[in-house]
Amino acid sequence: MLRTIAKLAAAGTAGAAAAYYTTQKRASSPEGPVRPAPGASEMSPARNTLPSADASPQQLRLPEPPIRDIRIPQCPAQSGPCGTIPREVCQLLNEQIGHEISAAERYSSMASFLKKEGAPPALVKKLESDAEEEIKHANAFKAIIEKQGGEPQVRFPANNDSGLNLPRNVRGTGETVELVMKSLDEAIRMERHVAGKIEAICEATENGLTSTTNPMQRLGLRQVDEDLKPFVLEQVTAEKDLQLARAEVAKLAGDPDLPDLFEACERIFKSDEDNHS
Image 1 (cartoon, rainbow, N blue to C red):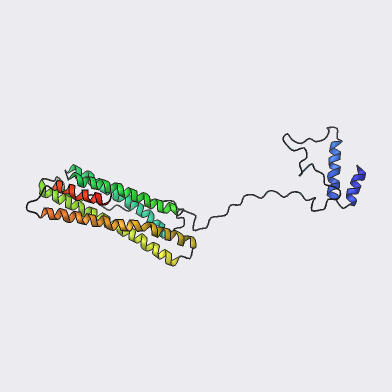
Image 2 (cartoon, one colour; image 1 turned 90 degrees about the vertical axis):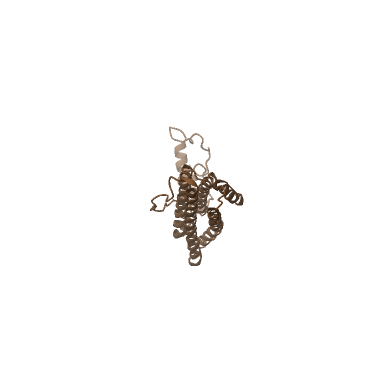
């Protein structure tokens, strides 16, 4: 054993000589040679294989530890609740979700009120349908934020409204006509309010496209701009349909031979429903 150690040392492989000595010493100990742990290899290259006497210093190096997984941090434009959307646009989108939900509640309240007052069922059904449509819009605005890697955080507008300013205890055809007219006026007001908010988002998106130098934000803003186009067209169409319906009701009210208002509303709002189907 000593001759072997001397040869290894003379060859300049001091590490190999020391390893050989330690191994031989353990093998000749009273407890016997050290056995590998259960499941371990009998001759693990990292521990039990002895280097040859001709091994170079590079071959005697211990194996390097495994490289750990490295997590690449997200670009600041992709992290946080806004994703790739600039903060201003993201805030307006979150506010729009609140506006759409508030409009849905308003339409639903109007439908319940008109049903109680005995308004034409066709108008009640239209308002209930409008409430459902506004909820779909709210979910669509949530999807716009999610598509850009953001997290929707609904912001509800301050409610300074004292309630529905509609005629109560309606009696007779004349009062019913007034109730229908004022209900349509309220619906037109709400559609204009929501359309104005969407227009503000479009303007903020355009401003962001001209000011940002972040390529991820530019891509996100372009997609938001595309996603907003159907809403702009729909808001214009919705207000136009309400204006036409109001004009039809006003025309009926001015007719001395006023036809049945309920049948007229059935025709007016049925055609409106067909235009959107």
